[in-house]
Image (cartoon, rainbow, N blue to C red; front, side, top):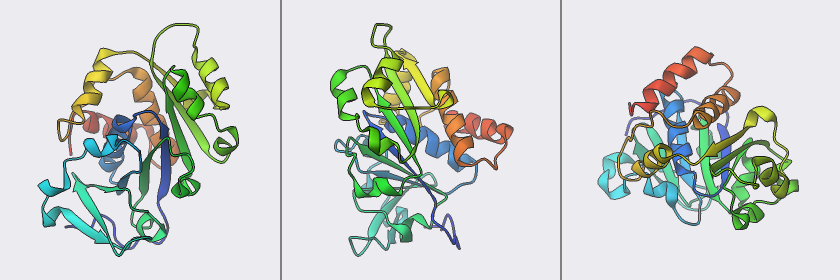
Length: 241
């Protein structure tokens, strides 16, 4: 398999995604970063494997689509090349692996104590209005370690407001890094399509999703101009590889 990045002398940026299902956000963001020419690794540490369901099964690729890499807790890790984006499940990603990528995006699910979380530069907290999900994410001291983004999704207008949700989770999030996404059938359609289509387009997703994806890209990689990020977003949302 062709090497995506050679000769990197430092670890890539690692971003952790925590909370309810958010696999579409990781897939969308990875494709935008890839369009910018960055090397990206997706990792699924979640309890339900939702992100893995959005990646074609490993057997479909055969040996040509796999790569053995030195792991921290195993003799090798098997990486799937997903349209230029690499993907791993479960096995630990340490410095020797991170050094090969510009960005590592990890789905932790609700595993807030995962050892790899300590290596993240930023945390994306994803929740809805259901109290059992909100309570599982209440860890104020933990979130103080990161640059935090909050994506509150599938909201319906009621007394359970975004401010209430953040307060219940003990989260203090800057105004430009909190996103309230109300229920939208098109968003749901695009999300589900991610698990059934190899490169499902995400054209016309909610403005809040679009703002989140563009803003976090610029925050993580400020050397890219707004116009460069916009071009990468347009290519990615059309399903270009």
